Length: 442
Ligand code: SF4
Ligand code: SF4
Image 1 (cartoon, protein in one colour):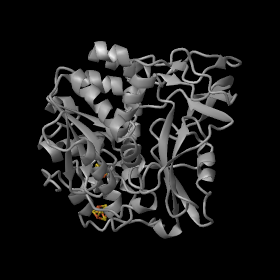
Image 2 (tube, helix red, strand yellow; image 1 turned 135 degrees about the vertical axis):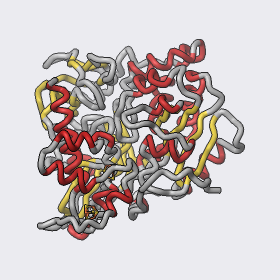
Image 3 (tube, helix red, strand yellow; image 1 turned 45 degrees about the vertical axis):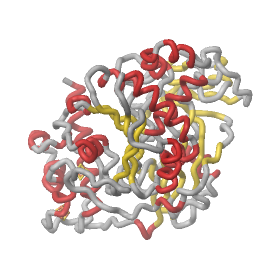
């Protein structure tokens, strides 16, 4: 039975496009000849390389260390030789220091890759450090360091939510991980429940993930165990952390606040699988499942690839691009970023590579606001996107701050709904970038 949600404000029901790949099992791609691993694979401070050109490295070896509390260690996704460390194009459009490793095709495991199961059995609190050392980040796309999230909630929260909503159209990475690794995901959740010393955690899933719900029901027969299930009506952006919390608990995270401020902590289901693997096998975050899809992809599918694999190789494995592709996006159509160089690497947060063709491109040469107010009515953060757009054009940072531009979660609802075809989200993203740059200078 679908549960009625507490309503979060706004939201939309876009075409979800998930049928292109939702029933396709994850294929494991062979590691490429070279991996390109940026020292910034997460939200937070970039890491500092601890290897040099010419060094031999093992599979899973630490290659760049987190210098600050909000950061996540980076590990070698293949064994081989470091052939370069230099700035290279990152999927975020910036040039970031990148460790290039020539794959020796041996996958020689690093001595640090050992099971931590006994450690956890003796002391559930050891989990935070294991997660930190494994460089695990939020695998739903946000890539926020998971150890930091754990620490932000320990001792402060009464509710653990496991986000399996994956509400962004076209993407099936979390969904396939959940279907194919249900037991491991649930084990990972149980480790978190013990760590937080709470009675249970609740998996939140949207009603359109029927196969995953069926699979979860096999493992969660009742509603009084340490892992529970809540099926919500489908609505975008329900998977955004603040909206998820409001939908399930009715609590509203204050502007600029954290989930812990309202007693909640939220983990993605794929992150729970990564936690389980790090504990059982000692493997850090060296690969990820990516949905490669869209009308512009020859054979859409879900692929497990090593971090640092060039997107071009991933697309080739999925049958290449069709002739009429006009945009390739890393992420989904709502929150993803267009990429202009297919040689950028897969990073920890890459959940999707989406190729769109001309028929989906709604941009026009002269976008114009007709003052319909639709963007305001769909904004889940109660913002006024049309005004934000105007002040971004004027570069009026004071007004943008007054209008709480930094509260924007970049969900894309405003752009999606705008009949005047204004790219509101992109303009707001740029405004936030300028404000962040200003803050960094101070
Ligand atoms: S202003 Fe931001 S939060 Fe509001 S709809 Fe647009 S992208 Fe989403
Ligand atoms: S939805 Fe577009 S056209 Fe309508 S008010 Fe907002 S910016 Fe203007």
